Length: 391
Image 1 (cartoon, one colour):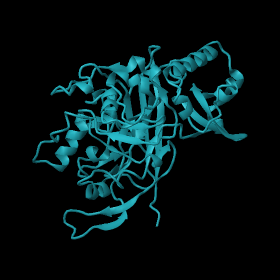
Image 2: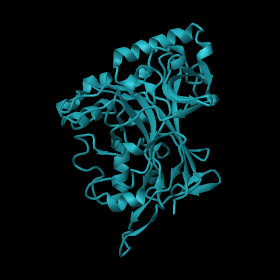
Image 3: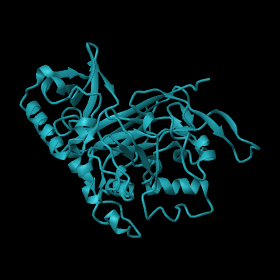
Image 4: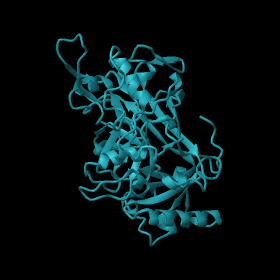
């Protein structure tokens, strides 16, 4: 990933992501905006704005006109050198989960990732299943286990069964994996039965977060047929503490790699775009992969259109994610499943190797994108340390 050159270390006036914070002398949660290595306390700077709130959900529900208005006010304040008394040092605040999702949906939008998984598990068959290029495949995850960056991840337990085992066994996963993803935070909700066309994406999605969809692969492998992921995924999903508004990503939109066959009309083929966001995957301080989000087959707008085409409703704060981001090259793969090619080829991590994540490992995902000011912005990082299984 190229070095961040935008002013403010990637958190300048062209970024201004939102988070929820407390301080040692004020334990009430309120909304803040990151600016460089400081945080603008909106409750202090704009006391009548309703910024003393446990999450961004109320603000998200107000819609794009309000989002744009607040962003403009904050930019004017900071660009003019004002608000100094409302800026808190980053190290003086505690950051919390910035939004409260009622629903979480995870997609499977990378052709490279889906093809790699197919080749690993079905080497004698077509890598992609027949439906994959006709619709964005996804599953409904567990919103209650979405956690903020920095939260420790307890090694999950569950049933697992190797093909040669006579019966399943229960215990801690031996194949804990990471998944480098991008998450999308819903702003404006919809009524039950209402569809969101792909063209209305920016009217309903407020912004993006980095996301790690932790996976217990041995548990997942035994349970997923016929209904898909369950305990192998539901124990934790980590998101960044900062939500980058779509307005900060105007320079990051890019054409999709190409879709063949042409998707059905409700997916707006040829009229939706991807995002040129670079990701860096780090284990214990060592970079193991750099997946490019620009390589994704299905666009964010297509994912949202498919999510709601049956009339499923949206609620402010809902989260949907891209699925693992993987590029074409070996150093662009977004999961250990792929990097080790099905646990057969260890990955070098410093002086050691990994087949799967070990207790004590810290995984950090970092993201950057072109900024509207000509440099690059840095999205909030996603960090989590693996803790031992509980007895």
